[in-house]
Length: 99
Image (cartoon, rainbow, N blue to C red):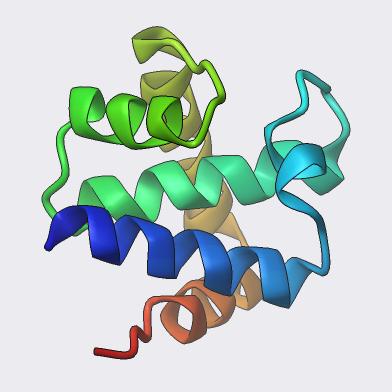
């Protein structure tokens, strides 16, 4: 069930941010890729997924992200959400999943 939620969150973010999965997971420091990834990590973590779970779901998609990168991303997303009400609104919207 959690993998399904992960995929729904990923799909929601890709659609909302209008980016491809390749751009999403590219090893880049561009905010157009970094912030959406951090938001995905944060949303999954808040939904009760462990860091290793998130890492394994990404691995199943054929991309590599380290445990440390995910932890750092969660921390950065928390900072963004603490300081930007627009992102809080966006995350609430992205958390909606279809069953």
